[in-house]
Length: 266
Image (spheres, rainbow, N blue to C red):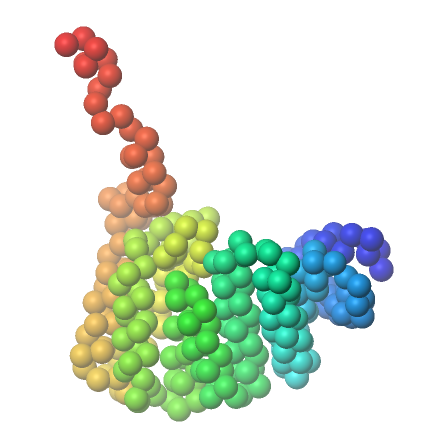
């Protein structure tokens, strides 16, 4: 395969093909790269990390193509390879992977859950989304997906008040809405996962409906969250709220607390 002397280049090429919508060739490349690295028993630590990335690409591509059985097989290989790689990292003294590793692991579990959704296995999907939440509680997506999986399978959210309140709590502590690349998002931690605020609002519109199956107290709490998001979006669009609150706060910290010229002249 072209570029196999540097498999990281192959990963970059797969990314480009996916971005361009050329999923068939991206799949072939990810499949070949994964198999080649899998059979390389002498691969070093860096190539071992690329194997994980390659399986992650393959599973994502197959999910996009709705090839559910193959996607499920690929994501199982992904998780197995990632767990093995993390054990190797610890053994070889790479202890600085921390939050990034947890974020990747959570994203893998979300992908696994989405594949289960595609297979019509909502119960298994709910479990995977729950694992994702435990791995990275800053990501709002699995909170939403967990409720949507139940909603899709049962037609309502009966007995889901605890999970719905967990979503509300996460939104309440997620910080302000920001506009990033033209999209209104919540991003609980810097460089962490982003959630589309409009998607959250749309989902909560269903969750707070009287026939959703949630009790009144839970629906009221979600309604408050929804209205708060809507209010912030309106404030950003009108210019009353900073489009990027984190950046605005950082700039404000750079401002001198005292006017130097006034001080020196006194």
